[in-house]
Image (cartoon, rainbow, N blue to C red; front, side):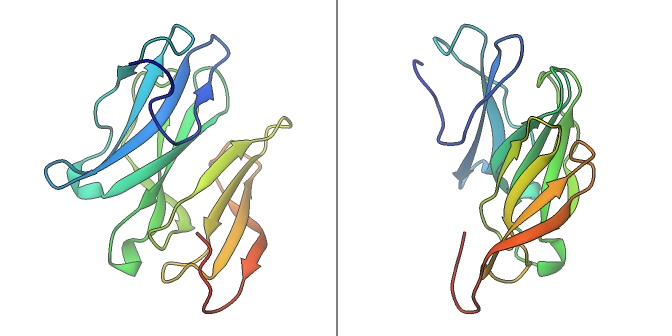
Amino acid sequence: MKGLPTLYKPLQLEDGTILSPSSIESENDGLRVHLEVSNDGAATWKNTGYLNEITDLLIQPTLLAFSQSKIQMLTRNCKKNPVDRRIMQSWSMDGGQTWGSFTPSGLPNPNSGIDAVNLKDGRALLVYNDSTQDRSTLSVAISYDQGLNWKKFFDLENEPGKEFS
């Protein structure tokens, strides 16, 4: 495969490795996340295989790198029960070669897309819908401790009845 294999933004590590987060929505395979990895400047790609269980219902991952080896994956959660609706996270401590189990991040998610970015000063920002029910509030959360804890920073949009996702 030539070129970028996904619509989500890739992450290039210090050693040149490109991690491109991706997901599928399939009747047979469910809602699953994986990575496409390139070690040759995006000339070729290798698929990691699915990183979550079929029952997790996760799609649309975004990546944060806190070092060459420590990477956090945050994902959209598609569960129907509002009690279960949280942004989910997984960690790699070896540059994306292996990943831990997915756990709740503590932030709500009404089955809507998210995106995150590292700042040069070490903080991380996350854009998400701050609700388990609807998409009328689009917020930015900030982490000062490499993605371990998130705090709502401010609302970009907040109009009842409107949808921002």
